[in-house]
Image 1 (cartoon, helix red, strand yellow):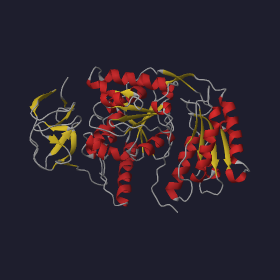
Image 2 (cartoon, one colour):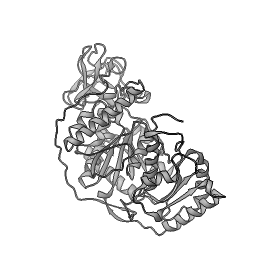
Image 3 (cartoon, one colour):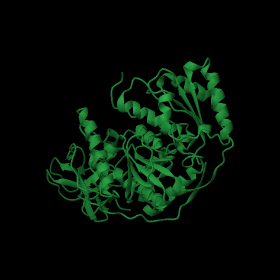
Image 4 (cartoon, one colour):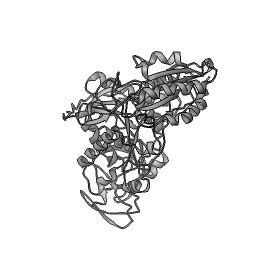
Length: 493
């Protein structure tokens, strides 16, 4: 096994595949080098002398500028590398016209719905319209656990602090997210729970729900009933009785929508887990299925790769707005666009946002971009889509579920236990994490450095997703971890 990996032939930086010691002579696919200092796993090493002011190349692209001379065999990190990112930019479209390799769809066993795609779960959801009834929602969730079992695969309340004292886009976003989740295919039954005096009550949210299956949704306004818990349980019992008649049936993988996200990333994320997810994405879109890539701030520095894969110039222009609008959001609060990576990312070997972005976008594979979605917008185009949402793990994962993802794939090099409203499969970038946190991790992509190739791992991940879609629980589900977070940008009244 090599000690280092050099991702592209033109790279000036390689990545340590194990902890390395000063004085060691180490090997990679292009040669050997003697180390000037200790290098942690996932961190970068200069393959030749890099001069101050010179661009450091990794993934075949600049990841920043050297702030000092860096001798060959030295550690490249925050002490000698700085971002080149800036604010809003003008872009030119240079279409690459990637091809989609058509494949016969695989199958999974899901729950067909009268309207929309099949669900991969048949759960009973309680959605409060406003934070004032969060405790009522939690009390109903606890009392309704007796309804779970058989084809009622879980009872979950998704609480949040919003729904009132909001204006403009924030108010609309809350309404859109709740409306989309209320009509999500993984929910066999939904109780939309309101207070009665909030800005975003049931009557305000209902128009955002579109053409929904009325047999699967009940509404309760707490101020309009004498005993909201008694009434709520009765409505949940009605929904559970309807859900017990549901049955899993064979469905084509072309009906799957899978969200793509990373968090707690490390220097191996763009080498193992994210490319594995990219192979999966290409497989699924080749079957006629759909994937959604989000966390726009973590596209900064790699955005032109996605722009040039847009199917047409209109999508290119939408992607330009996707990037520049998020940069404008940062600048409107007088914040730099490059205040990323996190401390954990840096400890794992990621230095600049360009470094992180070039690894992050590996999850998109090589397929053309077929759709660009605003925050809270439901997916309609099959194939690879881009979604406007921040990098925050739970906010972005909730946005993916709201846009229609039945499952989220979440790569991580540091580890995280959380789950969003849909099954959230954790893909480890390295074997030590997968072995240490078996109760968090669903799939070990670190095997790419040991005994698997990329195509094998991508096919294995496809099988894992199909099993999950057919009912195999994700680790977050086994742990009982389900949460929701809505993106807030403006004032609170």
